[in-house]
Structure formats: C-alpha cells, structure tokens
Image (cartoon, rainbow, N blue to C red; front, side):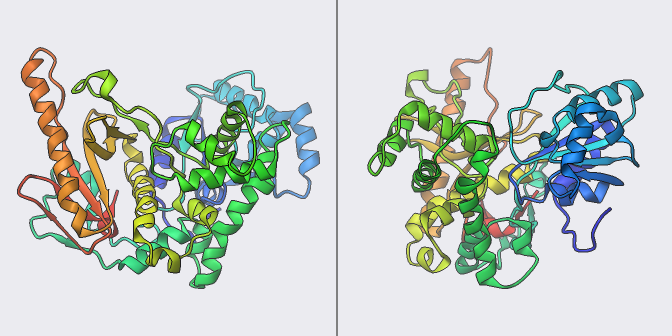
Length: 430
C-alpha cells in the first residue's frame, strides 16, 4: 500500500524488525509525524477508523464481532484503534491463536484511556515514532553517523563540513519535522503547519483524551509556559507561578494538564542522570522541559525565523530541543535513552545518551563556536570525576563515557586533542 512520495524514515528498519519478531506492532507518537504513512508502506490491507465514512458501523461491528474486522491480507493496518478498543484484545487473541509474525500494525496518536483485558505483552510490540530528524528532512548532509562514532568507525581525521547556515537552521527548527511540511517549498505554508498544530492541541485534542472537561484557555497557558521554559530545569512551582500571573489554577490541575500533553506526545521531558560520582544530595534530578518537536514551542512563543535570527540567545534553548529530538531518533534502533547531568556545583552535560548495550555519550549543545571550549571543558571534567571515582571504588568501577561530543550550529566539525568531538548538527545522522 506504499505511496510514491514516501520519504524513508529511520524508524523503517525498526518496524521491519518488529514485524519479523512479533504478531503485531503498535506505532505511537504525536499526530502528523507520519505513523499512518509509514505503516502503509508495510501493510497490505487497512482499517482507518478516523477516515472511514462507515466509522460508526465499524465501531458497532467491533463491539459485537471484532474478529470480523481482522480479516484481510496481512500485515493489516488498524489506524487509530482507540476508537474501537475491543480490537486490541481481538488482535492479541488472534496472535495467541495463530502464532504468526507480522500480522497487524496498529497506530495511535493519543494515549486515550481505554479498557483492554490484556496488555498485549509478548504479542503486541510498541514502537515510538517522532517527527523527522534533520537528516530525514534533508537538512543534514549525514556525513557523520552517531553509531559509527560509537563503533569507532569514524574518528573525524579529516573533519566534516555542514552546508546548513544559521538562517537555514533557524528555519528548520521553526518549521519542525512534520512530513507534510517537507514535501513542498512554500516557506510561508511550511511555517503555518506547526502554528495550526499548536492551536489544535488546546482547541481540539485535549477533548479527545478522556471524558474530563478541561479549559482550552488553561491548556494554552500551560503550553505557553512550557515553551518559555524550554530546555530548562524549571520546577513545577515556577511554571505554576508563571501561569497564575494571568490566570489561576492549582498544582493538581497543572499536573493533570501536563499529563494530557504527555499522553498526546506533545511534551517529552528529559530526566536527570544521577551517577555515583557525586553525593545524591548534589544532583539536580528535576525534569528538563522539552517538546517532541521544537516547532511547537516556537509556535507557542509566537516566534519566527526573522525573530530568532536577531535573538540567537533565546534560539539556543530551541536549538537544544532540536538536538535532543534528533539524537532520540538517531539512537532509537539501539533503544537510546536521553537524560542530562547537572549538579549544584554548576557542572553539566546538556545530554547523556545511553544505548541498550551499556555504552553512553556525554553531550553539550552549543549554537556558536565561542561556547565550544566551555562545553568541552564540562565533558572532560565529568570524565575526570568518573576516573577519580573509579580510583576510590576499584571493586565496582563505573564505565567511562564512550564519546564526548559538542553538537553545534556551526559549519566545521573536528576532533579536539582532548578527545572531544565537535560536530555540526547539519552533519549528523543515525
């Protein structure tokens, strides 16, 4: 069922593997990130609940005889299955009975609270999908593979050069990684997509999660405050105070609205990494506020490429969100998990990427070249602390970082004498 205009995605290989290993695969992620389009490349029949003119009849059939809806050439796509939740248990039962692989692909863009008899563990595998990375959208030339760096196949002996100018980088962050905006060249229309996405979150999507009545005005205030605090360790109390400067909500209400944004895959916070190299009391373990795509924050801030081009300091926070999004995508095949390091002594790593085999990399995200020295110094100091810890704890040493990387918005990449890689975001790929 594939389409001619399909742009290859990094998640494709993961989906192929899951179809070989499990009876069904459930693709989750924010709406408009391309879940259905990707699933269509691998499915041979489909039920699209939100697009089918006979939706009500399908839902009624699902209530009475869900197995009837599973008939069709496999892999069979069930798009937005939450609208007919009995299909989940039917898919699981089918997989139990037939013991076949690659039978179904389910998709969903909300963690709508639905009742299912079983979790699907062992039968239905979950696959998270993001908007497009800069490499997938064609903005990064992909001359440096993050996995080649991990595997020692790339040392940057000859350096690397990004063709992405700062103006192009700013535009890419404002446009976002939404596939629909990548398929045409109308800049004004491309920027309209994340703006519309932002409006739909608080005007429509919050009412699709559950039966709870919520305020569009409050949700908009929550998103806006999150955007003002993007890539910072803003505490919930700070966000609450920010919101209550113009309205009035309780901490319980704020927690509920943030939960909705998480279930809609809109916010995707970063949690602290707490290694044993410092006292537990010295670690900052709060959440770093992040969006699944930086363009949502830009839309909430009312920003534009023109605005950020004259305020690169503010754009630095958006740039960090962009880097985190891309690293999550590039490392997804290795179950990459992103966190951050920050202690009360001021030592930090903007990102820590852990792979499923125990390897990890320390990152600093620096938009300009003037900040590279400081960022590299932080990474080397953390490595030094780990070495000092290992000298004291010889029985249980901690693994040293496999990579130390400063990701930049600059043109040139290279390896420093201290082992730190300096890599433009416009050169990276998976």
